[in-house]
Image 1: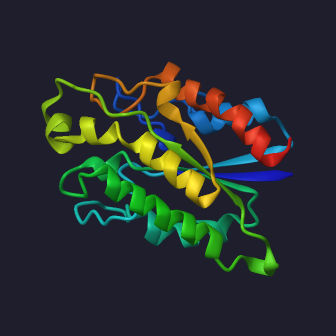
Image 2: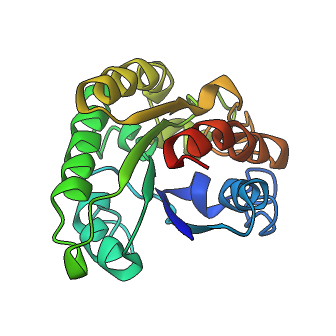
Length: 212
C-alpha cells in the first residue's frame, strides 16, 4: 500500500466558489486522484481554508501557517510515500505576504520540513511533489478583490518559481493552472469541473513518481 499526503488550502479542502460551501467528497481533487489510482494507494486530504506556505495569519481561528503545522501532520500519517504540496494562493494576500517570491521561499521551507523530519521507526522521507495552484483571476466580488489586491499578477509567477525550485530540489512538479482555472465568482476558488481536472491531471505524474 502506497500512502500519499495532499497538503493544501481551500483548493484541497474543496471550497465551492459558487455555493460558498464544500464540494461533495467525490468532486474534490484528492478524491478524484484516489479513484483513479485505485485500492493499492491511500490518498489523505489535509486541506485547510486560508493555509499559507509558512506565514502567520493572526486573524484566523486556526493555525494557518503551513510550516508550523506540517511536522505534526507528517508524524500523524507516517509512513508516507509521497507528499503533494499545493499552497501559495493565500500567500498572495498583501497582509500575509503579497509576493510570489515569498511563496517560493515558504515552499522551500516545507520541502525542508518533509525531508528532514524525524520519521518514526527510521522510515525514509517521502518523495515531494510541488503543485502550483491555478493563478488568481479578476473578480467583481469586492471583498475577495480587496483581500487579494495585486494577487492576480503575483500568482501568475508561481508556476515559474515553483518549477525552478522543483528542479533545484529534485522534486516533482505539476502546474495545476495547465488544467484548471479559478472561478471569476471570487477569483480564488474552483468549480466542480476544475477541481476534478486537477485530480485527473495529477494521476500520470503520481504514478510515475510512485512507480505504479
